[in-house]
Every structure is written in C-alpha cells, then in structure tokens.
Image (cartoon, rainbow, N blue to C red):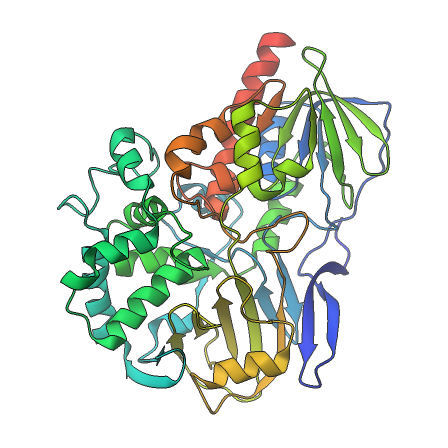
Length: 481
C-alpha cells in the first residue's frame, strides 16, 4: 500500500540558502508488521533492485521471504523525488533498450522511456585551463572527433579491445588478457598514448572530462579495465556508449519500477528502517540475523545485497572467507556528487563539460525547455548543498544561469551506501569479481556492484539478483526438499 510521504534521504536547497533534509518521493511503501517467531526460507538484506527482483522470483516459487531494508524506502541507490511538479532521479537514472534485464522489466510492467534533451544539444560549453577559459563549440562535430580519440584510447589490441572483452556480459572469458590490462589505471593508459594523439585543447579537455566523469573522480584511481568494460558494452563506439549511459530514462520513474516489482511479489514481508548488525551462519542450513534494535530473525538462507563499500560493516559469524574480507575492506572507488538544479529561466538544450579537477565534470539540461540541469562533480570537490557555490560553478559554463533550487543526495557519505555507481580500482576486476560473486551457503550475495554485465547500473543489479535467486532456489531444493 502506498502513502505519500518524504524519505529521509536527499536534500532541497532554495535560493535563500536554507537547506531542508529529506525529499518527497514519487512512491513510498509502508513497512509491515513483523512477527519474530517465524522462520523464513530466505532473508534478503537490502531492498534495492537486486533484493527486490530476488524476492519476486523466490516468492513466486512459494518461498517464504523477508526483505530487510535499512532505509525508509525501497530502491537502493535509486529513487524518484517529485517537487515543483517535476520528477528528479536522485540516484541511478539512465537505461537503454540494450540493457537486457531492465528492458525486460520495462516490457513486463508497461513502462516507457524519455530522453534527456541536453545530450543532443547543438552547442556545448567546455571549461579549460583550470576553469578559467570558456569555449563554446558545436557539439555534433566535436563529439564525432572526440569519438575518434576515444577509439585510440581504447584500442589496446588493434581491434578496439575485442580480444580483451569479446563478450561484455561474460567479462572474464579472456581472463589472461583482462589481467594484463587490469593493472593499469585510466591515467596510466592516457600517459601511454598522450604524446601520439594530436589533440586540440578542446578535444583533450573533453576526453579527460569524459574519462573522469565515467568513474567520478581522479582517473589515476580508476581501473582502465572498467573503461574497456563500458567500451565493450557500448559496442566499442563512443556515441553508442554514451547513449546507453546517459540519454534515456524511465518516464514513470525508477521508483515506479521498484514498486511494480515489489507489488509483483507473493506474500513477501518488508521491514523498512531496519539495519542488520550481524549474520550468524554457524549452524548448517541456518542463519540468525541480528538487527540494530536487537531482534533475532531466523532463516534457512540469507541473501546479502548491500553495496560493496558497506559489506565490511556487517559482522559475519563465522567470518567470511579471507579473500572476500580483504576485498570488502579495500572497497571500490567511491565516486562523486550528482545534483539537480531548477533554473529561474530556461536556457534550451545545453551540454557542458570540464576535466578534473574542476568541480563540475559534466552537466546538461534534462527537460524540453532547459529549465532543469543534472550535474556531476568528481570526489567531494563541489558542495552540492550550497546553492551559491553550485550557481557560481555553473556560471563558469553559462554566465546567464540563475538557480531557483538545488536537490540531490550525498551517496558517497551515506552510511548504507558509501559510493555512487560501481567502478573498480586497478587490479580488482580480474582478481575480485568471481570471489565476490561466489556464495558461501547458506549466505549468498547479490548487488549491482558484482554483476557481470552492466555492473553499477540498474540492469546489473537485476542481473545479480536473478542469478542469486536461481542459486538459492537450487540450494533450498537440495537441502529442504
């Protein structure tokens, strides 16, 4: 049952500088009454897309499922806020018909897509020389030229990395080749080819900005192999890759999709605002979940769907295997800042970009008339809760801009998230991915952070949840026939 309410996540900052915590959500779900004398076939920790789709699949197979979510809402690193008669995707946003799992869900629930208009703007603004020089150029010509240099950056084998990641949804099929390039950072690769690329200042700035934007930080921290993974998923073509990354979104909102999946579950119990402290799997074929409030919940299996960077905050008894513990302690790249602004006056279709360490790496208008801008900043350089700072930085691209309000959420420092989308550090994909995916029955794992294909996207979360649901069903069939 849905009730209009606000989530504690996110913030809204008006032109007077006052910051209001929490955002009105497009959809919100009530937590259900919990009876802790019950035993569940599956306890799912986390009600993001991985947890939701696993709950649906297992419940439709008559499994008794409990969903436990630390937040006051479902959706994980996605939710749709509604304010001033506009929808704002605060977390994960863009999808594409080539994202196989999410497109299946779009079809299943009769949803549709809409374009972020600024991606196809006629002109774009580029900030150069540490944000002191502004260049306005035609987007079409420069985007095509940028694509050619991105091909040179990506082409490590003379066939656009097709021998490294020939099957993007099976990323380790050529593992020896992956291992070779997984040791490089994105900056290492740029240094290898920089002197051989006769780039203009504008193209160099665009290239560095896009690379930084993709991992939301300093490219010397991001693994080059994750760039090649996106490159392969984007059909080894920059324009097609960008269309799949940031052009089309769910018209009805990501929260509408999350709610549709939950409503399709059969007799699943949902506990919101309930964090898990520990998971005891000492006894064979049994788990005991301890919540922050001290409640003990019994189950036959548990599916842990928390983001990779917060896995270390849950105590496992006995401890998880040493490899998984080491990976959890190191974590993946934390990403940067995403924000939305509503302008006092529309500016039409517009796109802007700037290389690291500028505080805004990329920003573009989202709606038809150009009243709404979505922006991204690397690391924590930009204070997105300070409307004066946000407006000042946007004015470097567009001096005519006047900001009405800013909204967003600090995913980097959210204690239940600790990252934006998934981007691995050098060496992590070849050595860590399989270890993170491997279950330790009766403990299983799923997350958009450990998917094979569109890792870091809604599609990857769905993939991981579907795979784990199948593994859990097989385990239950074997041990509890």
